[in-house]
Image (cartoon, rainbow, N blue to C red; front, top):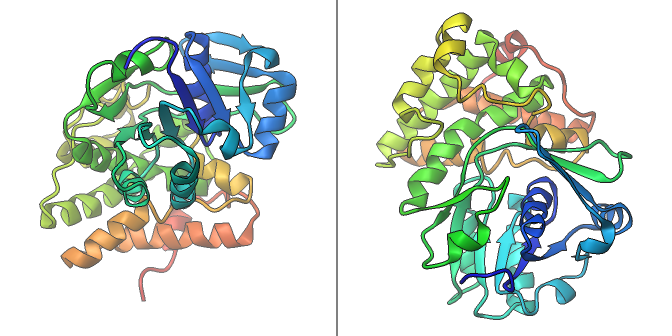
Length: 344
C-alpha cells in the first residue's frame, strides 16, 4: 500500500482525527473527514488550521478539504479507515464500516484504551483491523474560533500494528510521525499507565505541564500506576516502555522532588502550555468521558486478579460525578481528591 492515490477516511474527525487527517491532506494524501455536524459545518465553511509545538502552522482552505457527515458517502471506496471516535462509539462505527465500506479496506484503531481494536474486530469479522496508539495530545480551538484549529501539544510517534509493506509509508508524514510495532498489546497497556493522568487533568482543570510540575499531583498519579502495575503483574501483562521509561520506574520518577523530576523527566515535560487532556475537554463540553476505558480497564483487571485499586476507584467515582453534574471540570485540589471517599 503506497502512494497518494489511496483513499483514507478519518472515521470520527474530532481533535485527533482532524489533526491526523489534516497532516495527511497537507502531505498530498487523498483524505475524507467523516465528522459530526458541528465540526463538519465549520470545516466546510472555514477550512482547517493545523499547528504544533514545533512551530508548524498550516492552513487548509475549505475548498481543499473533503468533509462529510454521511458515512454512506465517506466509507464506500475507502482503502484505509482510521478510526478516531471515542471508545463509546466504537461499536456504532464498526456497524457503519460493515454496512458501507469495502471488505478489503484496512481499518486502524487510533483510540485510547486497550480494547477498541478487539471491538472493531468483533464487529468486522474477517476484515483486516490493526491496533494503533497515538502518544500525543491534540488541543482543539475553543468554540467560536474559526477556522477550526487543531494543535499537537506534545511529542511522540504514532505506533500501529505491523500490517505489511507500505502501510507506514502511506501514513508517516510531516507532523504525524508513524512507526510499526510488533506487540501492540504491550504498547496499549503501557500507554494506559500514562493515560491514568487524563482523569487528574480533567478533575483539576490545570494545563498538563502545570499539573505534572506539581509533586502533589504526581504522587496521585504514581499511586494509580502502582495499583495498575500490581493488577498487570497478577494478570501476566507486561506493558511496553513509553516515554523512554520502564513502567516499573514510572512511580519512582513521579515521586521525585520537583527540581529533580524536571531534570530527569524532560520527555514527559515536553508539553505545550496549551495541552490538557481529552477527558478535560469532554467535561467542559458536557460529553461522556472515556473513564470506563482508562481507569475502568484497570478496575476490571484488578477485580479479576484480586488486587486492590482504591485510589483508581476513587478517581473514577469523582469523574463520574463530574459527568453527571455537567458543569465542566470541578477544579479539585490534590487534597480534595485524597479526602474523597473510597470503595464501600
